[in-house]
Structure formats: C-alpha cells, structure tokens
Image (cartoon, rainbow, N blue to C red; front, side, top):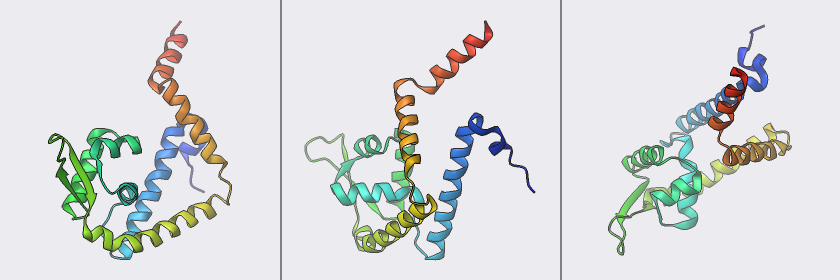
Length: 163
C-alpha cells in the first residue's frame, strides 16, 4: 500500500489537500474536454456562466464576483479572447473601461456547455453522496479567513511559540 504523506498530516496539510483535490478535478475536467473535442479550460465555466447571466461585465466586475485577483483574471480573459470565446469593447461612457461579452461562438456552444455543467454538477453531488455539509465548512473557513487573514493567524502563532 502506498503511503500518503499529505493525508497522514491531516489538518496540518489542509491547503495542500484542497489544492490536490482541485488539481485532480481540473486535470480530469481538462481530459474530459479533450475527449469530447472542446477547446476550453475548466476554470472558464464561471466566466461563461456570469456572462450568460449578465451579458456584459468589466474585468473588475468579473474578478470581484469570482473573488479572483486582477492578474489571474487578466491571464484567463486573454486566453478566452485568443480562443474566440469572449470579446472586449471600450465602454461608450467611460473609455477606460473594457466591457466583456460572449462571442457568437460561445453563444452557439452554450446549450452543450449547459449539458456539460449539469452532468458535472450531478457527478459532484453523487461523489459527495448527496451530503453538502462540506460546503458549510468551506463557508466557515472562507469567512474566518476573510475576518482574520491566514498570514495574521500564522504570524500570531509563530510569535506566541517564540516566547
């Protein structure tokens, strides 16, 4: 039997465990998209959904709604633009703003994407054995990190142990 060092560390490797799960799900989703010959990245689905619902948003608005950093949003949106899924246009009232919207290519793909998203959501729900309590724990972790950032918690523990 293979040893799993991260799992053995338990809560002490929480960040690594969450990242490993996220990476595996992203990798498998990327593999799925390749299998069905659709050239999109797993992380793009949230942008597709936002623009489907709101039609037109700025990069800042998208980043805020997703809780992503500006630099990571820039990279993602550039890739989506290069693949022809989104287009940005200068705002008619404020020339500094770039309004982003789905292209016709994306709009044509939306029905299939909707089916893919539903299948993915069903697979996750079944994987969780229909028990969504993990979401409450994640909500608590995020709220806790929002109230006191991890670096502050970490630093305080470090200072307390040095005494």
